[in-house]
Image (cartoon, rainbow, N blue to C red; front, side, top):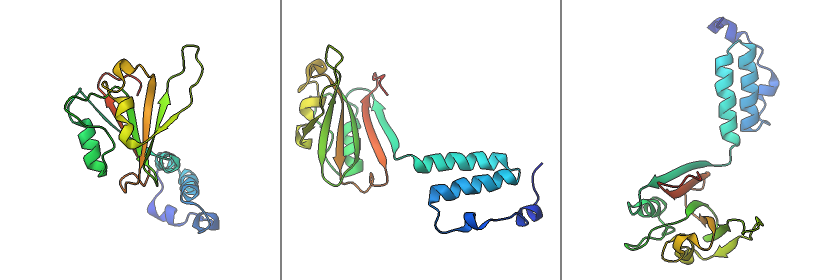
Length: 173
């Protein structure tokens, strides 16, 4: 049974819920508990989902499409930085993640070696990313690149947005 507006007004809003000492996610959890006491499990569940989103460190946006259709150009334009290599003869062969960082930089994450041993990440200048992610610089992904993670000081990325660039055929995502 749904509570009436009058019954909701009469609810005991404990000082814990109204405390300014609570973090936003803790406040949302407390609100969910109050909603459960009010019999509004539907809203309590939505509130719990919102709390989970608040705790999640990032939101991922994937830019996926066919070869040579402007994904890198779109990402570069959105971020205001030339982070993804663009060239008429350049096709990308590895997944690229772009996130916020105070200083521009890139890290190449490599697949395990033939024996299954983890390989150390490689720090590279952003200007050299094409040597790791393109078919020209890394034909057939012979270097064993799993992904390249790029950091740039972009206001668009500052709140936790991560842009992932991948080809249509990529099944790793």
